Image 1 (tube, rainbow, N blue to C red):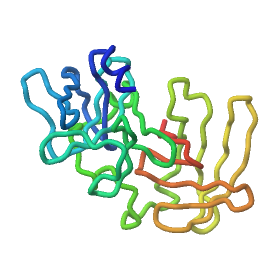
Image 2 (cartoon, rainbow, N blue to C red; image 1 turned 120 degrees about the horizontal axis):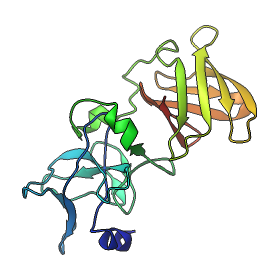
Image 3 (cartoon, one colour; image 1 turned 30 degrees about the vertical axis):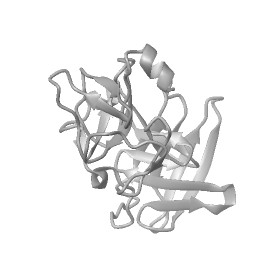
Image 4 (cartoon, rainbow, N blue to C red; image 1 turned 90 degrees about the horizontal axis):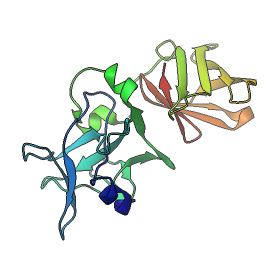
Length: 205
């Protein structure tokens, strides 16, 4: 994928759950590693950053060390996994955002890992998570409708790409984790707008 980055003017992306977009800059490499350089010569240091380097409307999340180099194929100091291209992953899923999602958010695209964490110290109630969550890809065809379940559980309708409807009941395991044991489905709350169901990422509609 590094070769792909080079043919696309060495561009890509990294990290959080909020943010304005980066409109200019490029990937640069030396014998030590890769870093993201803005048009004004600055570069991110000790932070996560969402970037759309090849201007395809898809953002990925990357972490940079204290010298500005991108972490790759490792676990970052704050405990998150990045693949060999440096993109933040959960399970086997690269975390993505799309231009239309970024436009609906406010703030900065420079974030600490705490801003992006799926932490059991953060309490999400089933009432917090009521809403529609669509698959995090360009088509966004399949989706979950989350509703209040019995007690602290989450009830869900899942609409797949074939038009079929599936019903789930997720019991609370921890502050951010729920499970439907009868259907072998695990639901993880990344943040208020993002859930993961069995390694597939869904974004609040």
